[in-house]
Length: 303
Image (cartoon, rainbow, N blue to C red; front, side, top):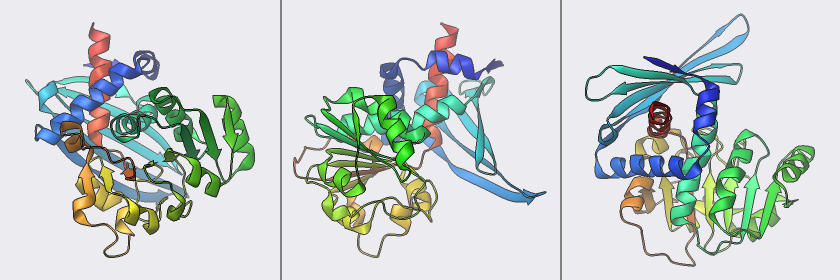
């Protein structure tokens, strides 16, 4: 069994097109019923003043010939990730990957997959809420997908927002209302537990991706936006129903079941585009993404 280090992962995941293709293939397999997802499980305790948690998730990608799990520790809010990959033909372990970098990019690359498939082709303004690791990863992943003329940054910490805007170049720091009403594509990548803006401000035809939380007590989007959305797209419905605060905390009747869609099904059968329809994409992160990218890294290193 091979040990794949963080540096090897980082050197391998340098081609966004290959990563997007691997993720697309995995979600299409899920949409066809050819893949299975292991839901996230968590166990938590405290010891000598430290908050400790171990979490696990995974997937079977039969069409790709692999299955795997991601296991990660949390100590006082700090994470460490590893992925173990198995051969589906023999059941033998293939590799264990140090997976901090893979986890950093897998969320943003999956959002990029959703943006590429579902956002308006002529989107001109991108808004990013947040200035942390995921906000930066999403800027890297999404900006090449459309001919964005403006990038707007909104973060609670003004200094962090200014630093982020300067780092990515050509971005403007704005308030939440300006970002919400102006952008064609909105990404929320924060640790907020309550909605970041009034959903009534979002323009018709916008695409909104909420990626900041995988805990049912936290939400970044309000009921006003969820009620306006023609579709609310999730990675895997069981995970979203258990972990997405937007779904769990929505008032009764706000989200009609027929408006909930899985990303894989939409990739299989792309819907006709309505230029006035708002699309919400809610990510909680699923093991399918981790296993798909781990497989890509492993195969690349065997070449």
